[in-house]
Length: 243
Image (cartoon, rainbow, N blue to C red; front, side, top):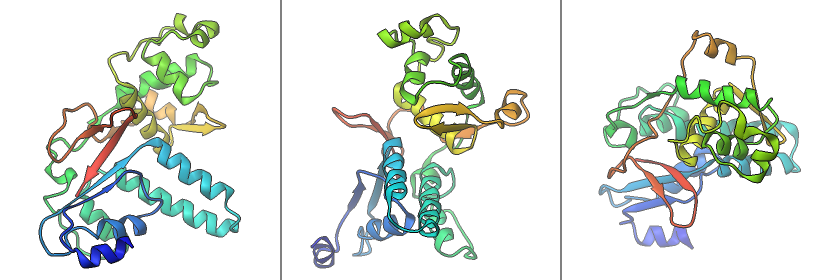
């Protein structure tokens, strides 16, 4: 019914994804429903860690064979990379479907119009890793964030985490911002998650010895018309890209 409606009404000005699709094929097809009359339109993708977890879960419990699961996992990885890239979003999609296509920046997507396209998060990464190490790599995503923000729940007090040096070390960061930073460390392979427990990968040695730096998209920023963090009332914060 939606496809029929779009064909009848080609003047769609906005397509908003409330969740991240599992692959770029789906996103491209759905986002392409905007502006079929040739006029300028906007596509906004809202996404969070929960979207990734949900897609990973469905792949894991699928009755399909291992080859199919691997293929779907690769597609999901490409979709995640799209949400985190600092490059032109339109060019990124074109490159996915046509790897040999000559790419030019569109100068219209949220990445192109953003002045600061990268943020050096190396210092924050070391803080997070230090906190995980001091908790002996035995805690979940949410507990790590609570400790970094300086919260003192009954569980944190019971475990003595309110007494470690990294308790409150990043109290100036929101839960969403810390979630973004931890996601980056996971995605770049510095952290691994096993049964919801976050553990450090051996690759952190290069990070701690200053052999490598870690960069991410800017995340501590005020909302603008094109590049923003949308705070949904009654829900957690969602990061957004638009093109």
